[in-house]
Length: 350
Image (cartoon, rainbow, N blue to C red):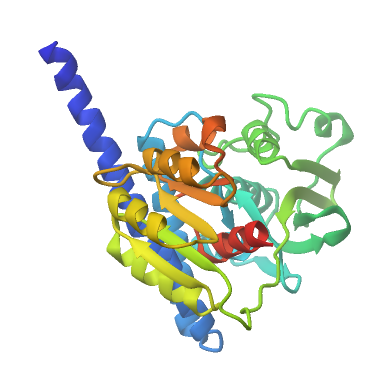
């Protein structure tokens, strides 16, 4: 029995550390979103904020790997954030004779993706493109929306040596390589294809000997709902989380959209406030002192079966588990962005 307790103690400590780190990154990403809106015209500030955001997303992926989740966490991200990081990584290493250019469509849709996997896949394709060019040539990395198919299309096109039809049909087979020299960089095209398909996307290749190669990736897009602040203060939200910074930050943001927000730092306070006030929506964190989020929702459902409830959590296990008896309307993984939460709130209240 003592040995079992000794083993469970580090596990519970790890869960608490992951919970605390997810809270930190939730407030960090929310802060960058606010600052990006404030400094849209300031290119230097925007570049620095994008660095903070991309580093945070990569740190989240590391945290997720520590938590031993079989399924990698996906967040709603902007492709341009991934590309900005790629550009700063690969441009300093480019041979002088190779020109790399990036072309973006206007108002690109977001995608639901694992930031690190997407970054490494794009980097692999760029490295392949560089290695296919002898001395001089060009690479064009372009991104555009395909609104008719609710997707984002990414193209990486080079003017390299190209691939023969015989080799092209095997290009995504395991162990296949068309490189003349061995390289330790990259994932291999088999893994790149697996990653894209794991994101419910597709990857295709067009190539002609001596005319270059183009890889075309299609990813499902996240349609953004245009949200305007309500003219009336008609909806009241209960926001419960054990992190004071998250409470302050998100209650202020929600109030700018004319929602009335009542906050609670633990489950016990949340239940007391719910019993005394009529709310239109509840946002509650899973891990809270005194009464945890799930227990809190049980009590709320005994009082009100209809009110929309959003459960936030840093645990992928909780996200994947069904709580049919609790009738939870949405579960959202920390760290979450304000824009994404706002869209969910709008959908549930409408």
